[in-house]
Length: 86
Image (cartoon, rainbow, N blue to C red):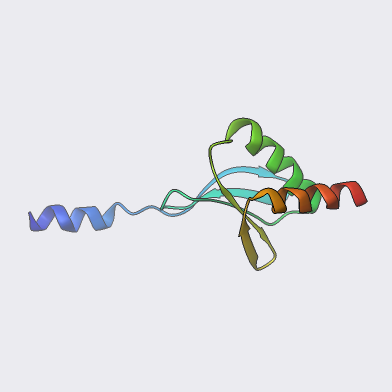
């Protein structure tokens, strides 16, 4: 039993990059959460569109610089406003 516990600690894995759009990266954390970080507003918009089609069941935290927030209706509106103003 002691050996089993020791082996479980060795199987931890690091965050995985799922996909990239320009400099924006979609990363899956070891605990199952998804995070989108980096990139220009256009890169993030393309990533959010892809996520809405192919990963719609996931809640993705979007990082702008050092801040992070989950993808709620307000964050989607902020990205759309940035795209419309440009």
